[in-house]
Length: 294
Image: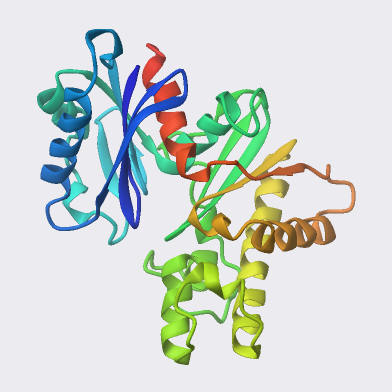
């Protein structure tokens, strides 16, 4: 069993998992008291476990660059500012008395889906998580891509897809996330004054303004996925995250865009959408925390 904590952009998910399946789960809204609320919610989950269900380790995911050796979030640009530089491994040890691992949330989601989820057994895969931001990750020949400084594979949401685009909060211009992250879509909906304010509802509305906004979003997501395929040559592309609650209305046009725009001789990968995208990160954290090598 593993205690898993996913510091997501819109909410914090907690779970106790057994071989990748949730036994108990809880959520905490993001806010000024993140750590205290998380500790209390996790303690409540742990109090409900029997000795046979007691977790042996903690997995922690954060939406940004991590220093795994130091157990810290390096940078997430306005997401969970209280976590910046905090020793989360030490916090978990002090709070729960358990060994802990930390990972970027998109990498954790990729591990979850290739270990026990929608792409179980895949050894060459990329993942694109569409939520508050756009998270990405890559698995090559069974090895999770991390790079020399833990930045590799995870910054696909900050590929430039519009040279004349708006500044992104990362400092770049025209990032895919600054066009089609949920935070950017909500911003643009508010600017337009549209009646639609929910991102999922955007894909259920046929007025001209909504169509233009979602077509632009699909192009940004599709261009990101094409770049991931060109860079990492996967067999499988996994689409996950909260925006995928809209289902095929999002997934199908992304796949069509990729198939149309890939390099002519590139492998056309399979596309999968998890049945439970809300569990992708927790499942990956469970697998990472259960591995004594991490």
